[in-house]
Each structure stands twice: as C-alpha cells, then as structure tokens.
Length: 351
Ligand SMILES: [Fe+2]
Image 1 (cartoon, rainbow, N blue to C red):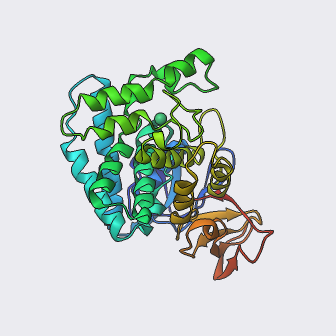
Image 2 (cartoon, rainbow, N blue to C red):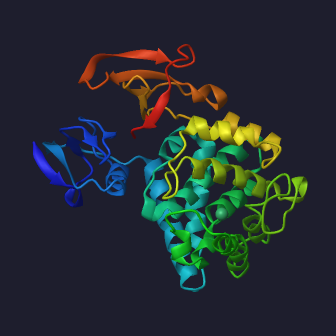
C-alpha cells in the first residue's frame, strides 16, 4: 500500500482505503479504481493524499467520458476567448456538441451518470455541459427534429457565456448578493446574447434563446419579464435544466439539494416558473438517480443504484447494498427497493 499525494494520482490506481472529506463524509470507497472524474472530485474536496495499492489497473475511457471532457474543454476555451473579447471560434465546439447529441439520441443512460461532477473552480463549465445533456434528453423525449435538437444543444452549452463579463468578485461571492450585485449579475443573459450575435455561424435564434434562459413562465423572470408562450420553447427547456442542475450543486452560499429534493422543488414551481408540459417531460425523461452511481442511505449503508427507472420512480430506485453502516464491504450485496421501503432514503451521493 502506498501513500499517494493527489498531485501524482493516476487513472488506474486502486484505492487501498476509504477516502473521507474533511468533515468526515465518505467520498470514495476502498477498491474503487481511480478515474479522471474522481481526481477532479478529490481536488474539489481538497483531499491531500489517498492510499493506493501498488499495482495499476488498466482503464479504458469510454466514449461518453471522452465526449463529456471534450465538450467541457471546448466550452471552457470558448468562454475564455469571450472573456478576453476575442472573436469566438465555435467550429470545434459545434462538432463535439453534435457528437454529444448523436450519442444521447442513441443511448442517454451513460451520460446521465456523468452529470453532477462538482468542481467549484470549474462550476460554470461543468454546469454548461450538464444543462446541455439534460436539454437534449428532454428534446429527445419531445420528439424534436435533429436540426432543432442540435440548435438547442448549442444554445444550452452557451447559455451562461455572458457570465464571462460579470466581475469575478460578484460571480464567486461567498454569500448572498446585494440588490446592486444581483442587478449586475442579471445582465449576463443580455451579455450572452450580445456575444452570440457577434459570433458567425450561429443561427439567429441562439442569441434570443440565451437571452431568455432566465425568463419565467409567470413573467417574473428577466431581462424582459416575458410570459408563457412568448418565451422561446428552447429557452423554456433550458431554464428547467438550468435550475435543476444548479440546485444539485454545492455552492459557496448554500448546501446542495439531493436530486430527489431538487426534482420535488422544481415540480412545486410548475405553472409559476416553468412550462408545465415541458417540466413533465423533463421529469419523466431523466433518471433522478442514474444507474451505477454510489449513494449513502439514511441507514448508514452504502449502495449502488441498480434500476434504470426514469421519472418519479427514479427518485426511489432499487439499490444493491455494498457496505453496512461503519462496516467492511458486504460479501453478498443485498437488494433494497426504496419504493417498497418508505423509511429508507438517499442522503448523499458518493460517486
Ligand atoms: Fe444563467
């Protein structure tokens, strides 16, 4: 067993001990083989070192992980160009976003398990990819034609591009914004529209969709206060994906919601903030707890999500318990259907 600083941690190393956050929550389990997204997670939680076994396990990145990383790197570089007021070259972003669309139309299961990576420093870029994934999954369920899904995907990944013009001290403020700061923050949708308008090769609807992603169904949004069907349908889809994904992230000013809590919250806001029909499609299309993610139960047990349920049923999935409370891994994992066990609930996501 080796003590391995995170700076030298490599994909394929196998954990020899459980890894905990500084406040004592379990982060990764003994036996997990390190993947690139685990390294991001360890860095995000400021873990200094882990214990690994001496032998490396060969890891082959799956297509979906490569595409996710590629979209992430591209949107990061496009936003950096926008921040420096350079002309945007969206050719490679467009190509990889179309590739993402193609894969999701074929099978979206693996992409759902990739959402929710939370690295505070790269929050905006990771959030942009997740919003794109959720928007495409919704569009697929709506039966939208491929050219519209591609347009939606591009608008979704660019929806917060205007944040590059918001001063970092407001964007990253560790606390509630003052009224004046919020006023400045709200400009990001108009800035985004302006940046998109200056970008060749984007269809004219994309700047409009970006501008409208904070408009709300009852007219309480910004920048204009548009209502109901006056808001572009694609902006209505993106606004649902945006709020759901943002709620499930830890922010400096509040603890994250568990995915089932975020789903319950947005459902409680239907007809106020969101188009009820689109919200219905969104909730019924996503897996709130995707297959194969590792969760902690309120019993203290750690379990792997087994079911590939969608919609409301996926709020309470079937799980396979792999570790008892404070105990070693169980030899024969046992199945718990949370639908049939109303007192058992998910309290944390391990990975
Ligand atoms: Fe936004």
